[in-house]
Image (tube, rainbow, N blue to C red; front, side):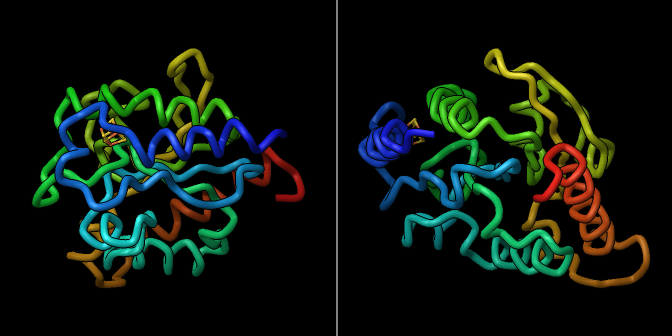
Length: 198
Ligand code: SF4
């Protein structure tokens, strides 16, 4: 795989001014991880720490998700991690429809380049963006869904939003944390089924 197009895409994102979020961001967060991976993790949008550092999933909730990935045997270093929207919405509000639409070509280009066998979505926003459904994450999480998005056939496994996990850190049976660990193990099982040796 030629890395040049991915680097060019990264440069385009870093300099992007396609939507008003460019005016308030510190850094656009392109994403990080191996380009040659069968699994991509997509979150909603950068938060304060991500905006400050230019790296995805480094705030409290992102770090918690990282710990759960590690615990379940799927460390974040094995995945490419990004968001549906690459710049932080002020006060961590939800990205608007227009902002999500403006940023959509970047996520599409990333997925077209990496061609993942499995996309893990974290929370409602990326799940709805890819699956085009209005169903909530409680219904959708932990199960494999397939869709055609931007001309690509995708296999999508949704997880709870990391900030929901941060607010519900108990480990009783059936708790969000324990369900998420089980969901990540299912994602790992599927990734290995799709890509033997992963
Ligand atoms: S959110 Fe996306 S479209 Fe908007 S400025 Fe950032 S990179 Fe560009």
